[in-house]
Image (cartoon, rainbow, N blue to C red; front, side, top):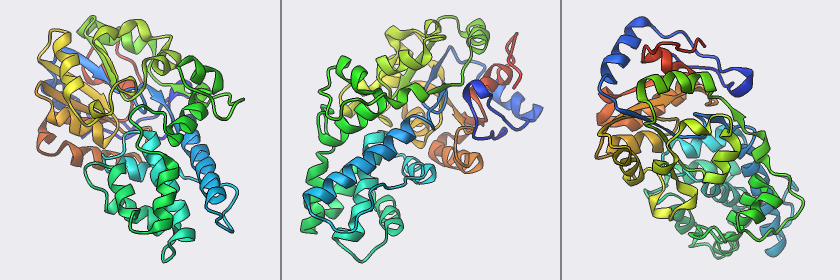
Length: 349
């Protein structure tokens, strides 16, 4: 249902295919009773292709180099290219919501041909994805424990790390936040001099779009996002005042068991605003599953326009919505929501 967008977003403008009036009619009927709207941040309110992806790539490069040095692996390249499509392959499983989990899995795939043999980087990536279990990165690490060298590589990654003090998390967070902000967050800088890729976040949502939505939902607009509060404030400062932050959830700041697709914090958010029926706006399989499994009455709005392949993103989201498919729809951009809901002052995109 509805149109897919291009890869662009943020200040440069997100492009979306035209959505048929019949689709808008279905969306309006589906969301008629919604009392609040809740957003994911990354890939919805903010285009993170220039920030999180760069942090993943540089984290993988650092960790591969560290493992190559510690285990004396000959012939490892000085840099390792990580494509956005590879990152999205992991994201599309619905099992790798945390970018540090993705960084860890890709690092293991990069060193496996040199340590275990019998595979290529590409086949190691595919195997990690195909064999992943519901516990995500933990299952990837278990799968390499039978090989002594790969087991040592996994140990060097120090992941998963519930307190984010393991090496992979420390490197990623310093790459993403920059050394100064990472220290402000209570981290112990390891690298030093990192400027932080968070500065490359590209905000998609506009003040005008939030104002249009407030005409329908008032103050009942919040976020349930994998970001921490500080990172969300940094990116969304121009529009942060529109959100009910007291009932929002910033999952990076919370115990790992609250991570998506666990619907607990989404339910807490909706109930905290005194609502029972909600729209949740996300862009990942985890987002769709979280909305599907919530105790509250949630309609899922999937955003496709920030994906490498918007058509494939739409298919992934529809599949993840599963039995709740009649309570979900897709749009190319968050900026299309006011128009889709027929709100006065809607934003043309």
